[in-house]
Length: 83
Image 1 (cartoon, helix red, strand yellow):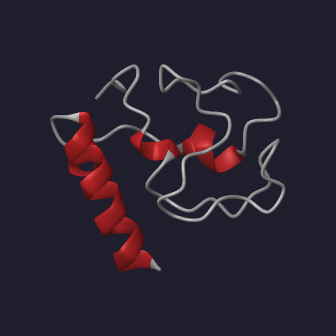
Image 2 (tube, rainbow, N blue to C red):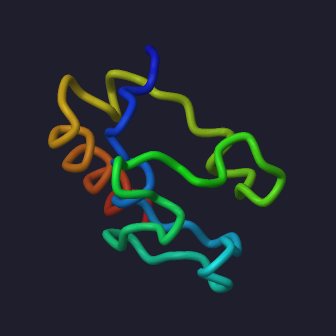
């Protein structure tokens, strides 16, 4: 599955424990990453400063669903199940 450009669910729903430029302690679940721009695109995409966990994320129907809203809901559920 290809990521839906402008979805941003993976930059909002899950927690990220790695430092992110502008968020040195990472980010809690449900908080929008400061590197997500107004079009829901990552400002760090392709850059060395992007956390490894972000680069390792692969879009999959099980976690991304069919819509951006469904992706946020599914990723939030996965976050809660694995917390």
